[in-house]
Amino acid sequence: MNALTQNQQKPFKALALWTAGAMIFNTLCNQVLTYSYTLSQFPVPYFVGQLSFSAAKLTGYYQVLLQKNTLSLYWLTQYVDFFFILSVFLLHYCLTLLPIKAFQNSSKLKKAGQVMMGIALAAPLFDVLENLASFVLLQNPQHLSEPGALMYSSFAALKFGGFMVTYLWLGVALIIAGVRKLKTL
Image (cartoon, rainbow, N blue to C red; front, side, top):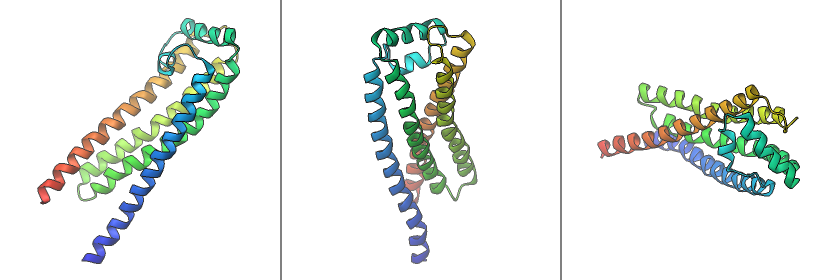
């Protein structure tokens, strides 16, 4: 019996190590992305621009970059963002796999974990779509279309919604796991 418990613990410990590595990678990517975004001198916090849902507002933000001659740095930031997106994908995978592993003996909780993993992994994919929409918008930053801006902001909203659901789920899963652990003591 002890050997069986140890065998089950080894994959969980390995996953915990992978999760720690993913957190470190995500932190590093976030720092580089933030630095690049700061260098571009984008006039508002990134989420304000991403959630503007307005061609006029985005055009104004891009106009500031053109006046400061930093649009090329903003382009670079869009490419740097792909490393951050990869780090989020890996982190979300590891973080949402932890509750699935922890809830192996509860089909409902395991299924909920699998659904949440799908949402967690969709969030960075929406970030990719947002970046691709950004590349389209940046082709002509002084004349943005309203449908293009709406598409760009919609992908951003879906991304942020996925992040929010993921982190709420992880908090709930942690509480459930803690309560379940206390019941076994």
